[in-house]
Length: 94
Image 1 (cartoon, one colour):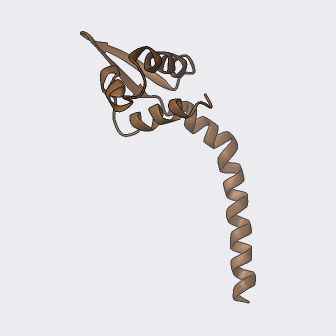
Image 2 (cartoon, one colour):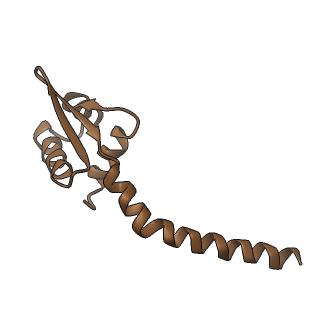
Image 3 (cartoon, one colour):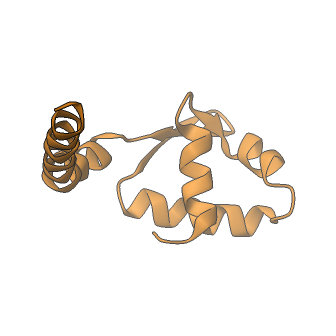
């Protein structure tokens, strides 16, 4: 999951689903096989959902696992960080 190309693929899918061909075109420095390998890892991690329509393979971002990670780990730390910043602001204003 840590591979930067996988994160870049997820970024491309953030706004709308894309076909595998569209993703291959967007990452012209990678061959189709490499793009497909990255997409397979993302699909196995349940971060994308693949739907076939005729000959096309549409890749949809599955944001639920990302939200669950955020809710479990990140939001807890963000709340703490916001309270620290709020205290600093109050101290500076006094």
